Image (cartoon, rainbow, N blue to C red; front, side):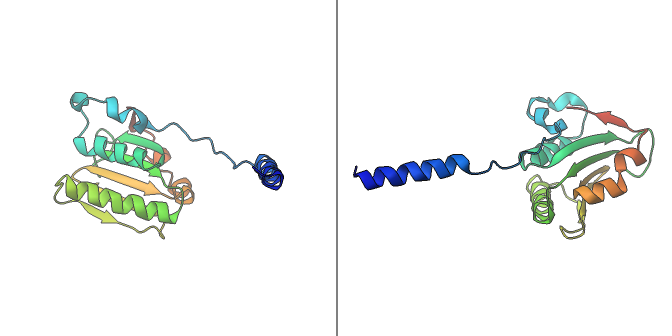
Length: 153
């Protein structure tokens, strides 16, 4: 290697060392991280387990499952998650629709868009809510349904 190339390599190496590190955001542990280990006899509907696994695999944050059966008649379960931004929210919405279609969950409905900050996928008593962080803080479903049992996987 010529002396000039060695000098250039050292300069590049020094620049790379001096480059600022990207900020790391501490991710709240998701309930879904253990979804793979959950047995089908957990008592939860399959749609919840598959939705939570999908959301976790696609980097949704702060995934929470609320059991509403004893406190409300609007739905049996809520799955609540946060998307990083509007494109991520749209991708999660599209992915949930594909999941429900591929699993042949007929009769599901999806409402909302990535730009709205909130999407809902509803399938026979299970509502999957995916929010932007601002909208999740605004609506605060966990506080609204504070009497609901939180399910951890």
